[in-house]
Length: 492
Ligand code: ARG
Image (cartoon, rainbow, N blue to C red; front, side):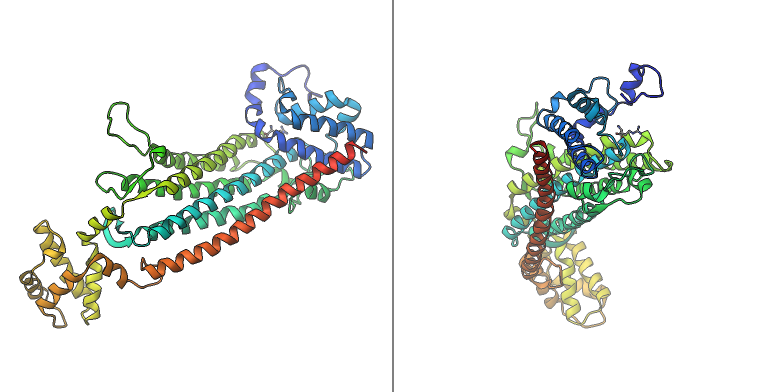
């Protein structure tokens, strides 16, 4: 349809190579509503007549109701296919005017912006639901004492709720990145035309309002060239994926028989074709893999956009599959993680058992010695030596005797006097519950701190919920109003 200068048909293989049709189905809806808004504006500015507008709108509504009618055979992309459909239905006299003061260059980026803003709103809602699940699990597990690990070795004791709330905080930042990205995405490029605007008296603000945009990408070169907001979106998804992959990795490790801290619900576990005992965390393993693929998408997008000249180049078309797949992978991944968290069985008893025999109370003991006036370096030495003694016996710190304590004190010779009986008493008295209760610093696993964190997270979540709800409603409301305007013109 576009071939005014080149003679004849394009080579079939070349067309297949060039075509974006396989990925364009998911932007067809946006191409239709974008075309409706553009046509309404053309009429309101006196550029096309009411009769012409009606014919165009009737055809576009038909395409909206039955997208299968839009024949993509032989078309380079969905923009060409839709325009050809409108011309076929409305006739060249009316349909041939739809592309006035417009180009596929502003059209494709318009469609992608509308698609991504919907995806952002959907994703924000899913992340909110996931954070909500984490908060609910956290409130049920404030008393689930477990070791916290550094280098995958037991470090200090904490609570399961503490870890869940750490995920929630990371997800809040992921949410915030997407929430802010929406503001940059929801700007209309429509009317920038091919690259340099138009001599025709269009109203860019009107189409922006009709389509629910917050403003314009004003500069026509910027509007048709720039893809930074899409790259930013996938970068945010990439970072989100690393948060989700970390959660997945923790759950995979903690669901092993060796740890036994959590158990996945049967509905979210797979098994083995050979080993009947198996309960495998395959969904979480895929969450891990998806994070690598997401990073690959981001690198592809950066590579495609790097050093492209200003103005549309066909390279930009290859961003679309990356973008669309990034969205759908992120949406399903967040959902999977939410389901797993929602139904997770927490083995508090096992966590406590492991905590009771853990050396992860060492720092708490050292801090008690500091409270007795010992320099921290002395305390570190003493407790380290006691742990070495216990480890030699393959026992926990409760196996430390007064004799052990006396031997260590003799070797370390602390700056401040400390009796062996007292040292042994301090070591034996350090229970998991005490270890948690003693740590009162802001952000520590102390139950009061957990309560405070849960309270703050709930407040923050409510704010985002309201914000995302408002945005979603605004976009939907604008498109409902556009549909009413279209209906009004069709029946006028
Ligand atoms: N199918 C193209 C894409 O997805 C649409 C824009 C084509 N524009 C052009 N001047 N060739 O990016």
